[in-house]
View 1 (cartoon, rainbow, N blue to C red):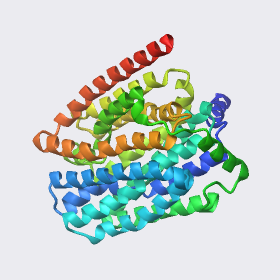
View 2: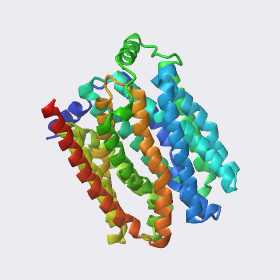
View 3: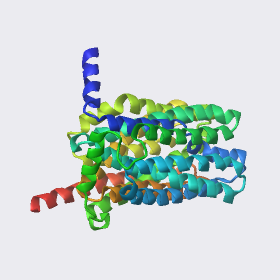
View 4: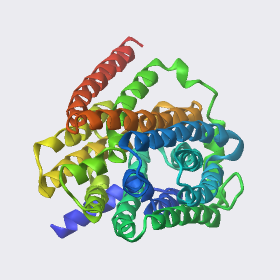
Length: 408
């Protein structure tokens, strides 16, 4: 039995290039310090005395910076290259993050948060394009799964440590986050250098070939892709409650401590690290859009059942449901964008895909915090409704694409 398990893991991780592992390790280093967003709502409300609505607006400012950063990152990929765009974004994000605790006014914090998100989110489309450049199409879904696993592993370590650092002093969250962001950029420099193409000749050839085979086709002329983006935006309104109302609800409704809240995020990552690559290796035989639809539904359902319990065990169960939805949704959605944008301008496609995350980061806190102040449970019931709508939307989109293929 042990031999069968080991063979399954070997099959799940096999075929991924050295460059994909380097890119994923860089994300791990960066995300290991990612603890600010998980506790920013508590920092703003408990330490600085902001209201939930004022704190929600700070998250919206972060989202605005994310939109600008995602667009900027997509635009920089052509002149700078995918790897160098990541390096620039990470290095510039470091001092901005370190500046946040120097301010106590809403406007000062908002400005520092905006700059932090502007540069850090420019990394997202560049990382996705770099992985597509270094990976054959048949391995791309698992390559994005490895990327997501690295991000989540870091994100579990970050909030888990951050929960204890917050008990000492919230300022340590910003220091550790900023340093880890800069280290991620330095690691990429050490492995790839700062040239447009990798120091490794074969890796550089892969990048050149991928760029030569692209054209300037606009995502706006791709109607199915625009429908895809609209559905993703709806899911992001739910997903970004993770950093907006979710920690506050864990404190208010479940009466959890900061370390316990950090531990819940760790549950998410442990499941992803242990099971995601195996999971993706099994579901790759099914339709991407169908699996993405089910992943979105499960993610929303995990949030939706939160009001049905009051114990930490129920909170863990809800996190498990969310996590399995996330494992289906996020890597498969990125893989679908890579597949859809093959032979087109991948930078722009990935940029607009990344902007759906940013749009969610803008509107989710505003909507979530407003609804939360009116009724703490209502936001979670809306999540279930959104999950059903999005599942139906992906089902219709798949039928439309299948019909178009038959007519072609």
